Length: 241
Image (spheres, rainbow, N blue to C red):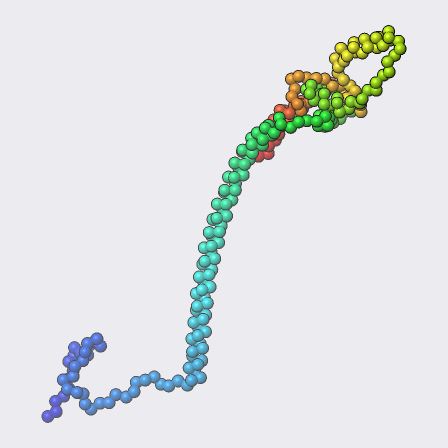
């Protein structure tokens, strides 16, 4: 009697276990289990479809990644610009706060080193006189002694020398008259410095500094001192800031 092949039940429950036959199996055959053949043209079409699908998937993936990076960089750029704007605002605020004082300190250091000429003094005087709308207004201009000398020297013309007079008595009288006139010279102001402005008289004021100018009219006193101008400039710079 032929012995039947017996397979333990446990061996049929898992493919991870080794199946041991007590005897070599007989009476059966195993046919081919391979996939059916595919025509080459269909295979090429399938490969092309898979390739296109892979390219499409990759393109969508990297497009999404690029958009994500763009969003991140755009946010970083916006953050950097915001910080730069904040720094710029802080710098402008500091500049507006400190610039007026810095400018005034520089000007105050430079002004004493500037030597005025007669032309400069004339320009200062005429600029203040121009503020009066009525050209026929009687004005009194006050300058420091040094500036008044420069202004006088600007329009001073050489006086021709007179030939000695034979009459000694007459010459002595002329000299005495000139001396008397010199004593009282400029007591009432000098109105011959600017010939085109006959109604303007000039006076010395020892309390003024070089570059200062004050004009008195029937309406009051026009203050053209350098210190007053600097104070106005400081106020304008401060208010503008």
